[in-house]
Every structure is written in structure tokens, then in C-alpha cells.
Image (cartoon, rainbow, N blue to C red; front, side):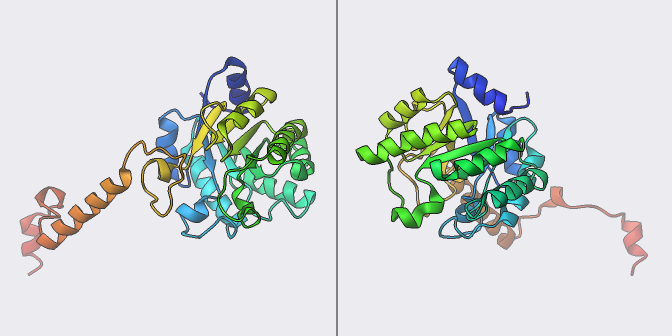
Amino acid sequence: MKHTVVTFREAKKKGEKLTMLTAYDYSTAKLIDEAGIHSILVGDSLGNVILGLEDTISVTMEDMIHHGAAVARGAKNALVIIDMPFMSYQTSVYDAVVNAGRLMKEGRAGAVKLEGGAEVCPQIRAITATGIPVVAHLGLTPQSINAFGGFKVQGRSEAAAKKLIEDALAVEEAGAFAVVLECVPAKLAKLVTEKLQIPTIGIGAGNVCDGQVLVYQDMLGMFSEFTPKFVKRFANVGEMMKEAFRSYSQEVQAGTFPAKEHEYTIADEVLEKLY
């Protein structure tokens, strides 16, 4: 079944949990899709886990379009959501609409995601007015990491918690169909989830949200530079890959790979005519 914004709305009504994982290429998207995950996020986290950057700030529209289109080709049922990169929507409402449109047309997105609360509501309204679904992102917003002074839990003070609630209500009113809550205390995430009519997708926000999202390299042990507290490793694929690479290297150096079963044949009479 093809998942859409209706899937998100109906899941919230029925109290059914939504599942989301990141992907940045065709092969991974295909595997995630075949596993029955509701949604695939082409996150600007590709700056970290794919491009080897220190943050997401340098990720471009071209990066998002390139990887988004590959994911869209592999996802037949999952809703593909593509992140709007830094400065693709903050500069003006016009830029936000144009760039969201590019992610839909060129990246083949089913929806876009942008970071921020009340300050980006004009952009959310304008984008949704064109028929493009929008996911909001509150709490720890990586594009604002320099303003936060690092990767820190958000919403712990009374003022910060109140603002997060107000921002959540604002993005809902502006037309967002879901909101990601990142690095937010679980009790605060529960309160936000109860106040909203749209689903919340948690990442480091406890199990009270309407759904969850993880970076797939984190949950498979493929990215070891930094592992957030909220990550659970569901498999140690990174170690399995390294062991396979070592075995390949050893067999090539020992001359045991390729073996006979990996070779193509040619008739001896053809070879005799070559001498």
C-alpha cells in the first residue's frame, strides 16, 4: 500500500505507531521499503553520514535532489520526505516555495521537511498552499547547531518548554501534517503529542510520540564517529561489513578468489587458433 499524508493522519486517529528511517540511495531505500517502513526521510544528515561533513550546514539543494531522486526510485510504498537544506527556505517565502517545488519535481519527493517554529510559519503556509505537504522539525534542529552551542537537549527550562509547545501549535496551524521532535524530554514530548491533532515523530523524545525516526547508519552500527544516547543498535552491520571486506582482501591476496565457480569459460579449440 502506498503511504501518504493520509497514512499519517489515520495512524494518529487510530493510535497506531508510525515508522520512519533515513535513506540516501536506491538500494537502501528499496530494502527499507520492502521491510514495510511507512516513510523514508532523505535527511540533510547525509552531510554527516554520506559526505563526511562535520555538520549539515554545507549540504546543498543539488545534494538533496540527487540523493532524493535515487531514494524515490527505490521506494514504491514508503512516503519519501526530503529535507530542505540550510538557507533554502530561511531567506524568503519565495525561495522556500521555489526550492520545495524543486524537491518535488526534481527530487521526486512526496513531502518536504524544514526546521523551525513560528518563524517559518509563513513559509509553511506558502508551501502547503501550492499543494506540497510539509513536515515541521522542532527541538534540536541541526541547522541551528551553532546557535545552540552544540548538540543539547531542548525544552528543559520553563520558557523553552513553553516556546516548543507554542511552536508546535503554530506549525500545525500553518499547515504542517506532522512534526519531528528531536532531543526533547519525554514528558514534554508527551504533552506536545497530546495537544496536537497532527502526529509527532520522535528522535530522542521517548516512546510517547506518534512515531519514531532514526538514521539508519546509527541503528545499524555503520557510523561510529558519534552515537547519540537515543540510538539503539538493532544490528552491528558495520562490523559485519568490515569482516567481509577483510575476508575479500585475504582471499584476493591468497589467490583463492576468484575460484573456478566465478570464472567464464572459452572453448579450447578457439584458444588453439589464437596461438
